[in-house]
Amino acid sequence: MVVLAVETSCDETSVAVIDEERILSNVVSSQVKLHEPFGGVVPEVAARQHLRNLPQIFQRAVEEAKLDLNEIDLVAVTHGPGLIGALMVGVSFAKGLSLALEKPIVGVNHLLGHVYAAKLSFPQLEPPFLALLVSGGHTELLLFTDDPTRPELVGRTVDDAAGEAFDKVARLLQLGYPGGPAIERAARSGDPHRYHLPRAMLEKDNLDFSFSGLKTAVLYLLKDEPNANRSDVAASFQEAVVDVLVWKTLRAAELKKVKRLVLVGGVAANLRLRERLAEECSKRNYEFYVPPVELCVDNAAMIARAAIELARRGKFSDLSLNAVPYLSF
Ligand code: KG4
Ligand code: ZN
Picture 1 (cartoon, protein in one colour):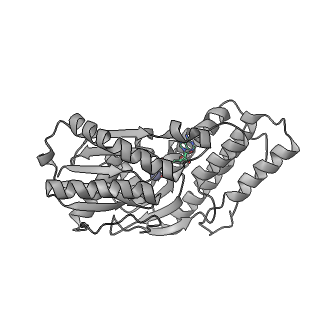
Picture 2: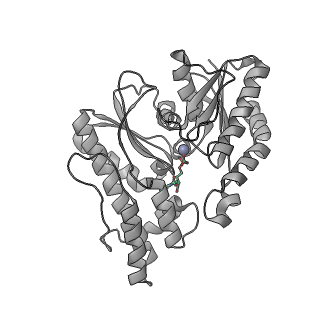
Picture 3: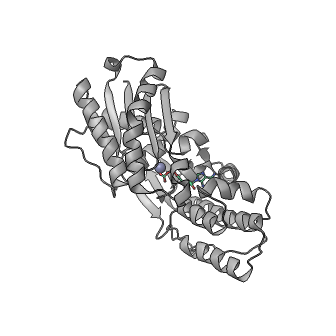
């Protein structure tokens, strides 16, 4: 099965072509430079840019895959969650393609796509596994058991997503946008134990996350100490986020009795988080899977891989497919 997928849920325009064994092309065009002056993604600007980018990105993805269009068996597209205008551009494009090529279409949940980035890198990965999905919009613990397209939500953030916290704290520290990579860079030369920041909701069996108190704590710290060392604050903040993510994930694994962990989503690009979770898994003899950084951030190859799984289970869409900004599982 050859799948062409389109991803436009936020600020990356991406088209990929994969078959059941490998990625044939995965073209990603980031709009970071465009949104940088605003310190965050401007939804209307993102949608217009997807509209401008998509035909060329599509062309490149097909060329790099060295395929004829008629060799494509399935069209896949992210239909939510995400920014409504941005999603609509991708969904309309994919529906047009499905109609023109006379090939079936599958609407993919963006979060399921993130999880399937792991399957692209580790084809042997099978449920049961617990996935920690950490991105700019989501922080969720998903348990995959019988149906690999319908996970059980075992924990989630009650306020900010982990990536959102990185972005907001980077703004407080004037480190620029996007915040995650900027904090990680600054933290490299900082002391993670210099400032004691809160680790929220660590009561024994609570598997939800909260990051807004941590962000506020950084705000007050900077008010009290305007000359605080930026690298030390970044390192202390990063350590606090990583502590909570690692601790809750291990607790969830224990409670749900799973010994196979998966780390995905944009924040999974963070080296400290990757190292800490890998270390704790190895101590416990758990299997640990984390995709390479380029598959952790938004890309269409992960959407294509999730679509294969949906298609195998007969979960096709049709031309009534719509963008759903708050899509859940
Ligand atoms: O998955 P993603 O590319 O887009 C969404 O679906 O949200 O994730 C983007 C998020 C942003 O908040 C960004 O700051 C964060 O992932 N991020 C990181 C790192 N790289 C990206 N956070 C921490 N450390 C990083 N190295
Ligand atoms: Zn994402």
